[in-house]
Length: 270
Image (cartoon, rainbow, N blue to C red; front, side, top):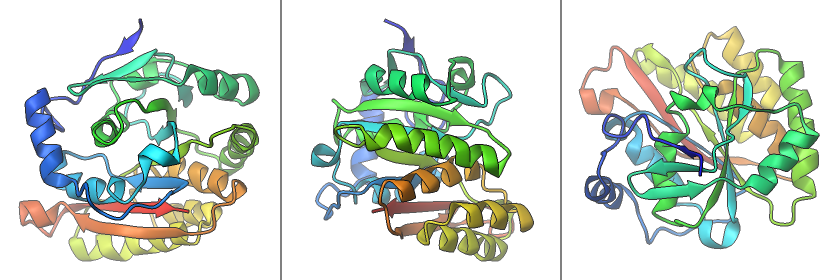
């Protein structure tokens, strides 16, 4: 079996089963009221910084009855591999075990869209891996489809969104679509709140085109803006009507340095 091994374990999150389980149990609210969301956005920094926001978001989603598969849309922080790549691994490993890739859905997407099968884009990328343990602890039998996206043209993003939505409309049990993204990078806390607030408003309105233009025109360093735009366009075609902010914070609340922070947002879409 072709298993994608973890690269962020022991750095972004604990590298042992016991350590990771303990930290997740501290962060998660297992009794929180849950909704059957169609999508979500979660941050992918080290758990000490963004773990609380990621945990609040996943704690709000009903994973067991809502879906059997999660599509993860993450940015590429590395130059390797295709700009629209589906992982061709059979499973992804974390200290909690392996999450199996939904090969049937992955094959459908590859056959009917411009997505490409490629491992290189995923081998050293942390953005999707960091989120997986939050899902495993709720549903270890969940299947995944990890997709790295780095398109720079809105027209190409819109085209891919249409292709993917057409496949997912015919899928018997629609998968949850999860975007991995941090927000503004290395600006003051005040500036981050100002810039990220504009992007959050666009996502609440489910307006992918406006989000794309807002981020570019205001030079917002939102690393996952491309997968976020893609997800919003897909979700709108699948009948999603609104986005809801779950939590917003920044790294300064941990480091106590508000002069240079990274913003973290958790959202659900339904």
